[in-house]
Image (tube, rainbow, N blue to C red):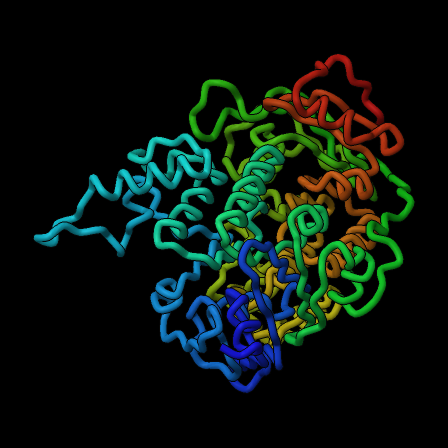
Length: 520
């Protein structure tokens, strides 16, 4: 073996000069990427940079492309997802590929069952193999229970074991922590460390800077479908990484303007909601707060605190199950339906844009006008020309990047999908805009644009209620912060008073509601 082939064979994966187009639109141009055994290699870039397309080529989803892919120094050309899996490649997407009603064991061996001499499934061998895998990862789990009984974090661990069961050495994780709490994130990172020690190579996609620098050995950046560079994480500073990703420097990460609050836009008194899933304790329990025109009110809380349920209850998602008083511009408002909420100037951007924010099979125009369709269909007759003109303006204002406004929402990058959801709600001309995780799964450049939009909207007098799991974002963009724990408000802080320590303490229930001072 010559020196060059020895150098190549030390790589688990090499992708050379990868090019890909869709219907003549070039999405990847001469992209390269490589992966070593025992490393976590971050694949970074803005939404729409080409990361997902590159991974789908590696996973055998896209089989037609130009360039060369090598596994352990040998050229491969996958014809299917199954081909890629047989070559030792596993991709764990944000939307997990598990069957909720099936057991952990059956999910792990689904489609690749171990069989005995007569062709029957060897359930004993499968069970022993799965127990061994979870023991190696230090995870205690009942492998006969349906996966739907486990948390999202544990379901991701099941996906990882599924990869290890078939000796996959290349494991791709696409935004794996987007719905995990801090403890679950740390558990995932511990598992990644164990996978690296086993000689697996991890391709990790994330927009969270703290995660990138927590686990990265190397970082590769794509921008606009082109390769920008690869560097060791220890030698690539955050400012340079951002510049590589967006092609410019950001003057400030969180450009929150000075708040000039107006009159009380929304007032909530003793507001409650029974648990939507039938649990005995209420999801929202006697909360009271105010938010002013032109103000951003941050709503903090750990998973299960009731903050998302509160916004949905105000918007009418659960129908007329709430109690308490709600006023919009000093006028009584009774939550009961989303239609009524929209007509009264409320809008809700939900935290799951793919499930409750967009219709993925519809184009940008139809999605962006869905909540304000009455404006484009007087006398029940749709005016598509007016629709197109309006959405063209919205796309320009929100900087939506797409081949055309007829592009399906499901084919857009995450950041552009989020902007389409925002366009839908902005077009309703809301007085009160409720944002639940508005920057989840969004790159740093798109986040900066969303922060700018929030400033623009508050300057126009819109009141914003903000839920975000990113503490720096919460502290920087909120003018006030209320904290929830088990359905109750446990604290309220002005922007000057709020700190991470105070918010986390209140989120864990260490302060009682009567102890906090309303700042209105």
